Amino acid sequence: MAQRARAGLRDDALDVAEELVVDRGFRAFSMRDLATRVGVSRQTLYTEFGDRRGVASALVLRSTERFLDEIEQALAGEADLHAAWVAAVRGALARAEGNPLLTTLLTGEEGTPELFGTDSEPIVVAARERAAGYLRRRRPDLDPDTVGLAAETAARLTVSHIVLPLAPADVIAEQVATVVTRICEE
Image (cartoon, rainbow, N blue to C red; front, side, top):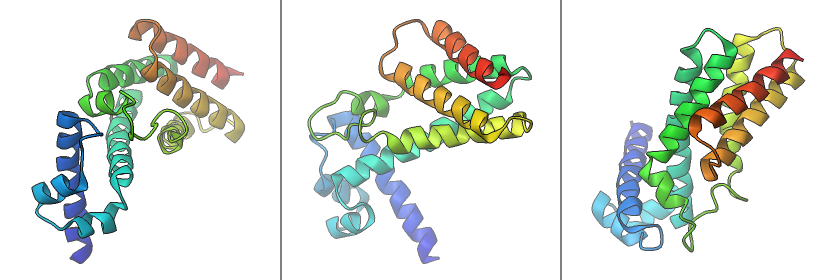
């Protein structure tokens, strides 16, 4: 029961934190405002998250998990491996573009974790693991090194294009899908 209450408090705090960060930016976000809005003490939040950066990291990880759930659905929705990756990458780019939290965190304002730089490891690792899981289910004949390379490539290229899209989403999706499927064919 206590664990369920703690999880509920964490979700409530993250919901409110997301609203605050999107509305005000990370620089104006404070643990005091979050505690007041959630109806708990600041100490409770510090115990749960550590500090503002901990809240930002928790927001990113939660958003990433939701994001990756949608990517997995896109992958599973296509029979052809290439078409599945096109759909997944296209969906990832569209979802990232329409995500106000991601947009706010990518502004790079002072104090914001460098989500796609040195602090991006949890995002890339989560994306890589989900991609590898999909490939292992879809192509159990692939050796683990090939699965790892394809998953790492898909995750890093997609994250890179989320941060700095240099072409239309359809072109990027086709390129990433081509690279991933070629790795799997070798």
